[in-house]
Image: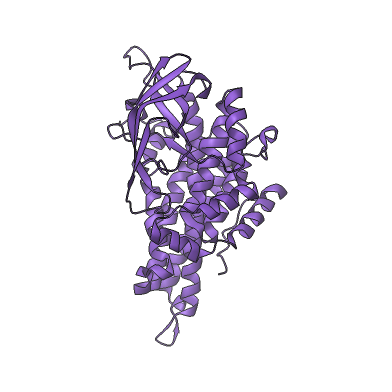
Length: 395
């Protein structure tokens, strides 16, 4: 299916090459592959292994550890491309967790021992990543995290519970946020949180799947940690100063989910445009009616703007400049644009938009996630109001 051309900012030859490689990869994993994985709630292991062979999991990893040593603009281009070629949210999310929660976080904040142990494994597809952030009593309030890590014998004993941990049942390594020092009213709210790498195998962790609406091939879980062991060298950044790590990781995550959302929207819009050209009612293609044209044109404009914002924010990130406002703005715009595109695609297909074999209902289910996770759009608006506009905090 010919894709709708949502124009990118001019990209380097290396990034263009990565896009072409992503397109080539996805020829082996057409849309019916993803439809079947969604229907069966089955992890796309074949795709995971092929993406590793292609070298995509090494984009954000330094060359000395077997990676490509590139930045978030390159990573976002690949995530966008695998999504827009029909892989949608699951295809992009798999790449994100390896490149952001794994490669980028460990490369920038990990100890020498952690880099040597985990980065080559990530590049080769021998370590599947998850992030252990959300908790039942904390939600999006990171400072209310209750999972505790207590120092003992050159490391930490960790106990706690996480929820909505995507791939928690399959992950080899979890980027875990835990409290290493109790909250203290005399200290900043962020003090006492530590980011660490938790190995899951034979380490007193259990995960139970949650049957959810979106991203069914990857599966989220309830995640229980019962006196698991984390060695000192698996701490990222400084003990009690995990917020410094998380801010960086969260900005990269915002850029990633923006790129994936836009790719999903581009796929849905492309399908809707094709159908509008081919479907004949009352003697003419339905796409000749302004009632069909205008909403699709609006979706195109929204995706275009979101994509430019995301690329701009990614370039700020790669240059080492502050980009939290831009990354969050990109997250807001892309989530809304992708949902609008998927919604209009379902409407353009009419009744057939609800049929599994047309994939619009799957993309509609998946893109709805971006308005709620990894962070609700209300919290993004709170952030933009306070950080972008200087308004008083409302939470």
